[in-house]
Amino acid sequence: MNVKDSFMGFGSFQVKDGTQTRFWEDKWLGNKALKDRFALFNIVRRKQDLVAQVLSSTPLNISFRRNLVDANLSNWHRIVASLQNINLMEERDIFIWGLNASGNFTVKSMYAVLINNGVRVSQDIWQITVPMKIKVFLWYLKKM
Image (cartoon, rainbow, N blue to C red; front, side, top):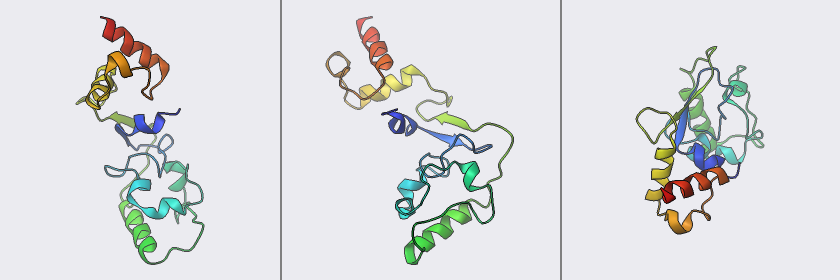
């Protein structure tokens, strides 16, 4: 779970029913998570809400710790405007892996991004912040 945000940063969600996608923290509306695009994340009450929870009512099911004024209000209007064309469906959300053309996760693509980020598998493998099973797998790859 320690590397979940790093892992999720390599992909994005295609929202269908909104029950697997976090409204603020996942990439689903553009190429960045809403928390990284707007300072509103700092004042929202429920940071972990799912897209389905937020879109479940009109007005949107979001509350802030203080009133929205000036830039915060403008940013909120931008978010609301971008949600006008979102229609939830009866299908599960789809996670699209951004490191290969198929959109599906592969160990090879993860390995490549680790190597390209300067990780020397022979020495640094045990210091990187990925789950132990991936470290062991990388170690096995190196031995081949």
